Length: 320
Image (cartoon, rainbow, N blue to C red):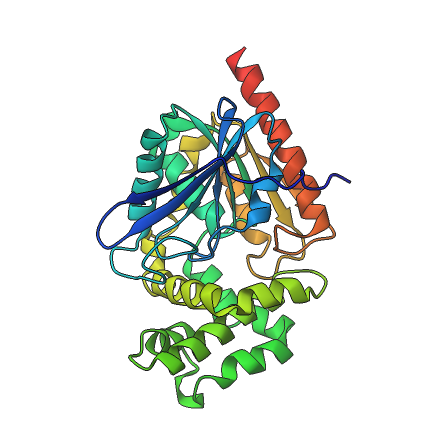
């Protein structure tokens, strides 16, 4: 089984001002002359982690990490103004032009798969290939599964704690109820709601319980950005038209792509990936039998590292 590449440090860090008040954190590591690859993080609002650089061979790849608006080291933290899907796609283009890149490989999981797909459907000519994990189509049914009725029946003990933040009379629409608290003027109420929202996701993200993942999701800096921005997007149907990704899947047919999805993914059920695969049969769907949702699970790591190499080989073959 393949594992992550050795730890590396960035050779360049950038701060890019986009629409006020947003300023993006962008870093580069690996080989400055290598194949450009953009790590597209999840959430929305999740931010990048140091281990995200390690999915790629530092000798061959120019590895680019960006924290999306309001996430990670981008500022202001957890900012909702001017934070929408089309703005994130615009930011990706701004970064590509700033770094002098013609075409790049996109590597995204969960919401990162959503954003990578939207970018690729918008700027097809700029995408060398796609390595996608834990497909999230952002349909109303997908949001309802995790925040209303679905995962709650798989993890009823965890759900009790998630539900306990909300009075019984408001539980018919949990996303709206949390949004009211996450945008409250009461900072204590905000952080309590954010930690509960974020920990619910962290607990459900792995096939085997993983305290490190839960602790990361529960960290106040991570939780406030993840919860506020996720809830903001889900209140707005992720700023997408109904079934937009499936509708426009035909635009992706010539892009070498691999889809990695854990069979026991309870955050973004496998049905998301199957629906995308049906609309986009040219992509190579790989169902990982012993994994859930998280990119850090050993079987998912193995599949992703292999996926990068396989997409690269397809890209080279197409070029040849």
